[in-house]
Length: 469
Image (tube, rainbow, N blue to C red; front, top):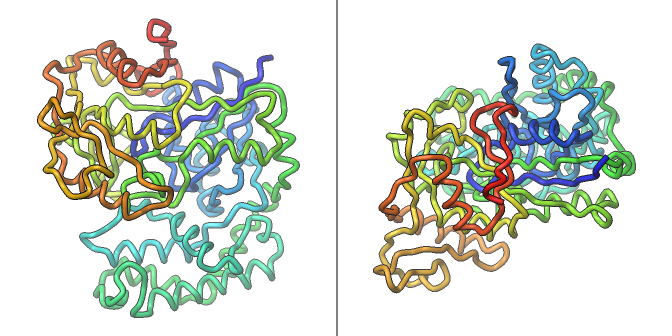
């Protein structure tokens, strides 16, 4: 049995096919474990089976349809216990009755509580037209609160200790309630939440923060989970990850949403860099004998949920079917854009490079579909140009590359967001009329081997791209 350690990273704004490829590679390489190493319950990784069954994997690994494949929720994943119970119920209806028996949750994982979810939604409601974009489950709020109040952090290992868990829950509730009532609330310092008006959504979230009985009722509901899935010690997780065979590290979201390299403020509170996966493997004492191989996952075209820059957005591409990504709810409109060489170069640089590429949705070319490839942007020169971008002096100063700024420089990332908002995509004269056209251009642009491509939503459509190695 060959031993592999493979990490999958999205190269866009999410929705690139990580779920389908995780399922397919678990089958191909007979993986025994899928590790979730970043993010939280905001993930939405769709897996469709050839028999028609479908599940959107949020916290369970996308290999769970395969018997015997375990899921590890590794530290620093943010765990949403209530959503886990709901997701397990959906899996049972889809024929998977033992998902909890195959789940390990690191006792150090931070817990996404109902209070974090309510607070995150209230902050987004307050932003109005300046919304950052959110899935509405409170992952970012959990991380923000943990950084501001480390003494209040609720860990998965705390849940069985009922008195301790209740005290922390009440501390979290009181802190968030005070923050969201104060006039100096984050993001809009001079406008308190109560000024939003009689919005029923605001009233619902505030009622939850005001209810002193929520903590105990929520703990009663979580009892089932902690009995079925006791907190795992890091040594138990290390033993699992050091077993021979294949382990898939399934990343959440895409690198263009990374908290430090994404386009602020339309980002996530999560590290989507390859170092996030490497750190989890190192924490488990692995990686020396079998190094982690990093694969980038890319759709045949770009997509984005909600607000934020998408220079090649084209409403005409709404013709492309999207059965598992709605345009309503907290995430907002689902947009589609043409392939973008500038963002692809930036994504690879921001991620730290990859060992190979996986391309999904190649069936978008069926029935005469075609795309345009954006090779650069027309943007008026500005005073920050040298630090933000690289221009082609032989092509009227077209922007061909974006520059990442110093580490953790959100001002730089905000300026990049402004630049992208002004960008007019410049398309190559020859359209992409087939999957072969796209694969050849991607291979030429990146210099990365394209290992697999998928021509549909199921693992049965994945094909090895031998001619493009």
